[in-house]
Amino acid sequence: MTTAAKTPLVPFDEALTRYEPVMGLEVHVELGTNTKMFCGCATEFGAEPNTQVCPVCLGLPGALPVVNAKAVESAIRIGLALNCEIAEWCRFARKNYFYPDQPKNFQTSQYDEPIAFDGYTDVEVDGEVYRIEIERAHMEEDTGKSLHVGGATGRIHGADHSLLDYNRAGIPLIEIVTRTIEVPGGKAPLVARAYVNQLRDLMVALGVSDARMDQGSLRADVNLSLKPVGSSTLGTRSETKNVNSFRSVERAVRYEVGRHAGILDAGQNVVQETRHFHESDGTTSPGREKSDAEDYRYFPEPDLAPVAPSRAWVDELRGTLPEPPSERRKRLQAEWDFSDLDMRDTIGAGALELVATTVAAGAAPQAARKWWLGELARRSNDTGVDLADLPITPEQVAGIQALIDAGRINDKLARDVFDGVLAGEGSPEEVVAVRGLEVVSDDGALGDAVDRAIEANPDVADKIRDGKLQAAGALIGAVMKEMRGQADAGRVRELILEKLS
Amino acid sequence: MSSPLSREDVAHLASLARISLSDAELDRLGAELPAILDHVAAVQGVVESASADVAPMSHPVPITNVFRADEPSPGLSRDEALAGAPASEEDRFLVPKILGEEA
Image 1: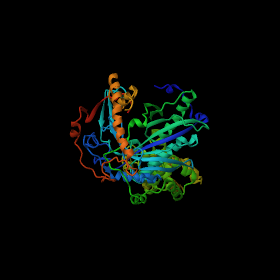
Image 2 (image 1 turned 135 degrees about the vertical axis):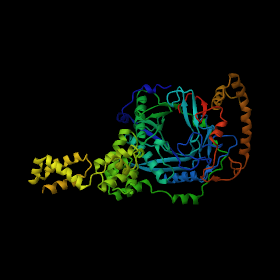
Image 3 (image 1 turned 90 degrees about the horizontal axis):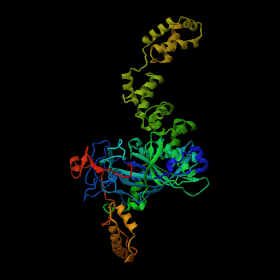
Image 4 (image 1 turned 30 degrees about the horizontal axis):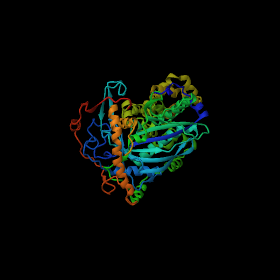
């Protein structure tokens, strides 16, 4: 279908010497409502297949949809949080297509009358602020889940048939679409990542969605094209789907820049198509060629009355918004007494809200920062799982720090506690108990260990008696070894000096 | 009456509607579809001749904001849901393999 795959990938930095990337991001947010968009079916994640369905979401004849008030409220609040205008009057539309993930043969969406439009949000990368303009945010419904049988695991190629679970069909979605984003090329991958990260933080702050990329409740599509440096003519774009983590958003932009550059360098044309991102190697592969919009034969949904939010309601909802992201960043930096660099690194790591919640749970800001940007960032890199999706909560991190502050564990033992919590062994307290990680604070046991160390190292003991206190390190090491690290080194030092003074 | 639709136009419409048509059917429909378009044009003529203060409507009743509280209501049991399916497997609806696209 395309010869494009055969052209070489141009290294990112080299591509930027000849081309400028133009991006557009489409983010779908699955709302955390109790019921679906147009029917009263429950929306629990992980329920048995086809147990949260009814005539409406199965598209059975005669079934009539009714709009979920909470979903409209959430859509308006999302729009307001993104500085959008809220439509005075808007309608739903049918987007017609044949695919078994939507049993009605159309998706109920919004077409030219989105509930929210013309907004923006400011993201920060490396201390610079970039304004991302929002074209629209509209309401629609999710599709069912397909399971392809007979081919390679779950993939459609070679499948004999497909199995459909419609529990997810009809769950409210808000699709947020940016205008084209043009930033200095080298920043494009980070700006894209920061934007999606900020949307997640906003959704969580609004309380409208758990916005978990790893569970599909926040999904990003990355549209990208290149234009020659200095040109104003837009190139043909690709639309990369299946981007399931913040890190993947960044990687998908980098990869597509290199791929497009290779095609253009070879004098070929980029094919306008959907592409699939592969988490394993950071590449994309072609999906289907994009239908033209008119092929969806959009028309106003005749079964649903228009939505006309009163200005009084919109103003009331405006009063429920969380603090805007840029003000929040400034306030937190001041409260935490972070340097610009500390703050930049925290935002860059996608750890701002994680640190904030950890601090709220009682940890000192610098301690919270240290764990998220050190120990946990390392584990995130090793596993390719976003920080926010690691199986540890900010409250648990604060709990581990509290154990350190209480002198019950030291930093070295804390790393073992992190291991245990991440492995699903329970709360920090439980891990400490089960793994026996508490430091020995019993002076009797410690004193015995100190006595044995002195006895085994008479030369060192003599040096200390002669006032060479730096020699104590060797004895502390011996005691810590005997206690398998489970002692407070400061207390051990005190005991040694007491006994040898 | 409008002129006949080309075979390509009819084939495109057929592919959107997922129906398979023979060449003979494409030609017959290419001749018949303009009659349908003419009927629609007659409706459009009414809209155009109506005074400017008559807005097009997409819903038969002039109401807005028909909402439902976000409270779960019972749906179908799994057996009821699958009862109308021509085939099912593993508690899911079984559909023929989907060609040419990737999920």
